[in-house]
Length: 340
Length: 293
Image (cartoon, rainbow over the protein chains, first blue to last red):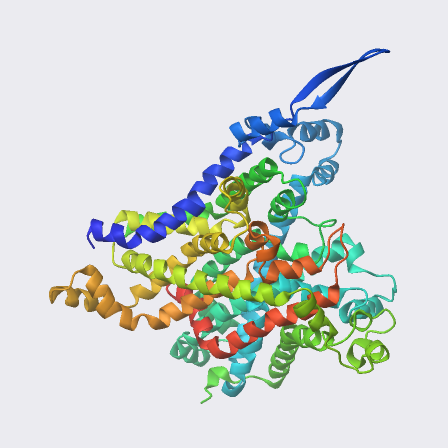
């Protein structure tokens, strides 16, 4: 295809991405280096018959004028990144010096808001992703051995948790695990503890968030694996049986190698999606027990005072995080492309 | 036809059937439970006395005279004007899907027919954009949208969702167009068409299966989005998902959980239909990217 034709074909698409993805990234970076203007304070002297008093007053007009002149705020450089809400450099150094063991340092570290969110996001990503692969694979194998008639309805219901809006799906689960809901009541009965409540316990909340994560994304892994299983070479399988391979050996040496490229694909998509975990934290109202990076941004942006700079700094750190996570994949894709 | 490699011992069969039943329960039961519960009052749906009340509707009967009640739906749809949010969602989805597909087919087609180095880079950049959580962009949008009075309007949300959708749409359509033989449009060009004419007369008639599948996923993204629409739409223009979140209440305001339950069911119903009619397209769409590696 000629360069010029190519240009006109991709122009609308590239323009949209440039205006609403690339520029906003620049804008986010700039925003994170600025902070909101401080209010302009003027000192007024009130003189009366009993002498003069001085009082400080906010000059609304001057503040407005300053904000209008420099809408980004005042330049603070990378200060926002190092404050308590983000990388918390001072606090980390102080903890490092005062804590005597590494474990103690770590447990104090994850009480700082940014590290708390980071810790949960990473734990979630690296626990949910492998479980999703495993679970999706099991469902695929099971459905594949069901009779042809049953497969349609089986696939239909399996798709449900994935297609349903994440906020809605997690709300549905949350209402069931409420202490007054069906699963909550069963948990209380099973643990023989009438006061057991998922909402009140941090470990239980973490487990439920991850259970939701697997429930939501296992169908995706299932579909991909299921399609892969349809293309496994039947003759090789038969040959393996003739050669005396056990069921496990057939899976281990014939099926799994065939599915390996699919696993990389699912893992890549899952890493991206799990890293942005957000909706379940909102619907589980889990913020007291677990926060994620996306949730931290949402929390800064919402509410009465929009803390744009703080949100921007967290956004930049999140983007850096996901780039690091994806870098092995990108490097590999680049090598594959160069080899071609 | 069963072959020797598919034969299974009885114990394994039982294990597999048991596992499938458990998974079906986990996947489907919550939805039916919520559907059933949405016709009860809050005291039954969240029963302090006995969870079985949610099934039998003991309090619902004593409060309303019948074991089923539409109070939650009436409250959500009429009193809280959920229909307005539904209308907004319909508008947003319609425009996001149409615009995404128009831009995406043009771009995806060009990407599939060019082997230059910049094609690769464009796809990689799209992959990176796809990987970024959309909410990271919101703090970049807000100051500009406030400044230019763009904040809160549906068209703003539509164009933002189109942009966020674009990387995925490009990737998906790119791989679909790769499967349409190049000879098709090249022979049209030999016959005297230019590139665009070849695209219009030869490619457009055969591209619909891929476009419909991609459209389904664009629809799902627009329909399911919470992070972006909650942040850039004003209260009057809210779509369904942020509206549900507003029913839950905040630290300052008391929510009404039953309204949320009713609207959750309302939001899920169209998705149910969607899977029913388009199951095959969804499955083929999810595997399209994967099978190609």
